[in-house]
Amino acid sequence: MSQHLDSLSIGDTIEMKGPKGHLNYLGRGKFTVKLMRKPLEARKAKHSGMIAGGTGITPMLQVLHAIFLDSKDSSTTASLLFANQTEDDILVREELESLVKEFPCRFKLHYTFDRPLPLGGSIPKGLLIRIWYRTTF
Image (cartoon, rainbow, N blue to C red; front, side, top):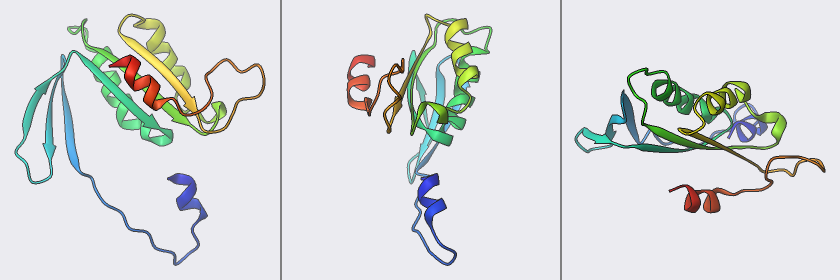
């Protein structure tokens, strides 16, 4: 999205829609969801599966912090598929990987890239969303 917006000329227009709803993480796997024209719903999950791309990592990182920095919650788990153009484009990589090291049984982190890595790269290439989704959930 960022690259598309960057490619626009002054005076170009785009149509935008959303947000479609609102999620509020309350802690210990509990959260509320407010969808458009629907009442607020309370939900609970043992595992949160997340997919983010580029700067879309920001809201995911907020939820991950809420999950893992809560000393009273030792059971909620999370998985994140983080898509970027290249390995060099990974934002907050050190922070994410430190969560993996600190919570190896509770947090799984996966990267995917639109552009191939140089030979010898260690992270999978291409879009793996469908495969990752099937094996994670």
